[in-house]
Length: 322
Image (cartoon, rainbow, N blue to C red; front, top):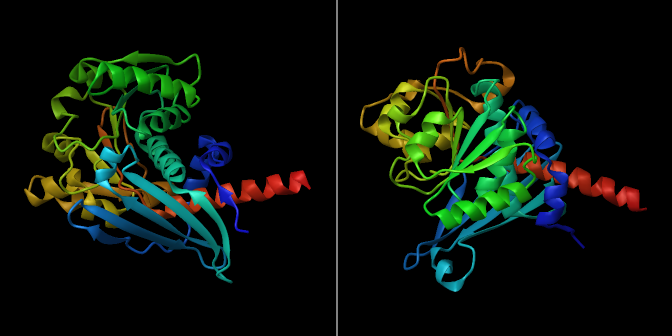
């Protein structure tokens, strides 16, 4: 029987320091990542199926299956559900099924933290989390794993959501010595932050150029469609911009697609992708006053990297139990 690695097992296997280090190596390797397939299941309720294949010659391959069903909000079910299938590339043998949601949450946060090691100031101490969704706790803990953060501030649409998210962040493993603060003024919170991590589905910019201090690093995770925005045009055109992958971000991210289409920034304004940073082709941050932006939309390379780690941990546990 093919084993199923659930969310709890993935959490145990994918500590952020371990996953961040593995991603640093993976972004320097020859891994095949075709563009994801998107199939509309129903025009009436806008439900879709996404297929995300990825493989590495002589090693493992995988496919993430993702369903998006907006009408599930009325059914008290998650709108996004996912499953990852890991195979042996050479034989095609299925190795494991994995919880796709937990895999995605952890690899997304780890990729942002990896980018932060190149793009944020090494003395960054104040982290602002914008958004109170499923990603918020992961983003907070991952960023704190790579920088000497002493305060995490959380902003959301309601005080109730902020309070609940702060509890989830602490439960996700935020060290007790790091202070958690609720923000009721987003502009002031941005002005005080060294790192701003934004994970929302907003269609209106939340992070504005005139509320960002020199030396700030902005991590934009949530806007994965061309009609979504988390940062305004002035910020995107003035900052030094980096992406997870050119192919994904330049095709899908509204924070890039919209200002480029309007002629407010050029394709050349996007300085490098994460592979360039990991390989040393681009140095990343060059001084303490520049404003940097990392825009990600996700890549199946990250899924395979995380799945490989989880599979290795699972096999090691089986050997210990023999």
